[in-house]
Length: 310
Image (cartoon, rainbow, N blue to C red; front, side):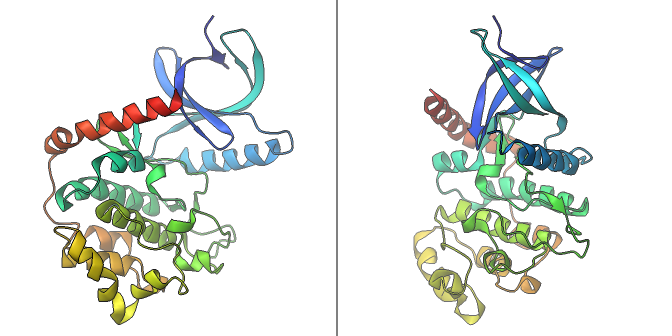
């Protein structure tokens, strides 16, 4: 007996997250990713509201790097292979087979600029397109970036996505959310913030982590001594250790990161500025070169994921 959810046949498990499991499903010969929710009754209404908001953010986007959402069903039956049934909600999305960027980085370790640019030019382009569409992601981090099996980038999990105009239509957000390591200073300090500023800051941290293979600070606050060094005339002290230990670390890279991680959001560049920056416009490998060099890292990352899932 095949396992089903709604009118989809479940083929395998892709992953887990929060109170949901992600399954590979098929309907009419087409494969999709399905996020199946089984929340506690006291959490159900809030989960449905949040998922409806996420669906509303994503469904009208036409960005190659953003997986399409196809439908959200609030009440459905999940029938398992043994015939047991469970009442669930589910969200159907494009199936983006691949690995999380963090899984890939754990295998690839430190790479030269030409390979890092291949990935991050795609991410920067996707964020620029998302902002031009009037949406902020608000949870950019390596775990929310997929490197597909065809070596394209996908931004996933827009559960915190919101209009750049903000809930009050004044251009600002006030909800403290995100992942602490990637949260901008204004979010850490519980100040109002603009979503595009927060995305750019998180992008800068993600790029830094990928190039240095190190977490540069704990939180973006002026009480964090490492983060504080990035500000003003002291930034060279922050980079002093990395210049000794990271081969090929260029002045243009350090300048780009320093500018993106400034405490004052008005001092940071825009995503358009980032795309035009000297470092971003440097040499980059072709897709074929990237595939030849990085396929082994992709396969190792997939094998590790499969082992973890049993």
